[in-house]
Image 1 (tube, rainbow, N blue to C red):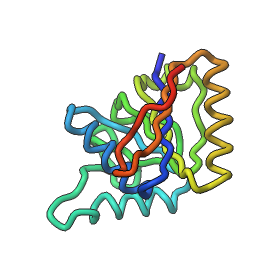
Image 2 (cartoon, rainbow, N blue to C red; image 1 turned 90 degrees about the vertical axis):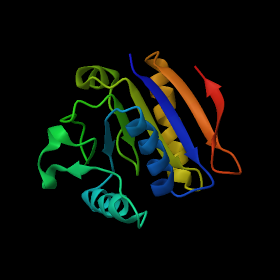
Image 3 (cartoon, one colour; image 1 turned 30 degrees about the horizontal axis):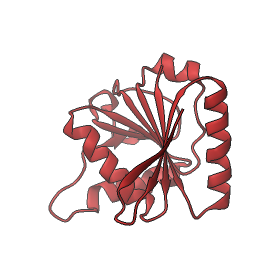
Length: 156
């Protein structure tokens, strides 16, 4: 059963929080799949992961790039796991997979990042929490502190 973590963004942009989480995953070393809400957003994240640091980049790819199975971070708009990742990150309103789908894809940890300033995103995150809670998933809720770090606020 995958653990589901909710990351309530209140201090930083999604792109910055995503980079911090992906760096932790890659330092393990592990792989991740990032599902965005639209193909335009996948392209924007792709560009950002190449250019956020003038001296470096975060290794990643998408279906457009090919070699999906070799990508340490795979960007997509649908639930798939071509790189055999253990980590799934959902952002920009990407739909939350069912518990059965998570198990079938082999994910151990799901991170749902949502904008705390967006009422629609908050409402969707709350509904997703309720759905996973009723399915008896392991849930953890994190909120950003003043420095952009994470404080655990709830665990189910």
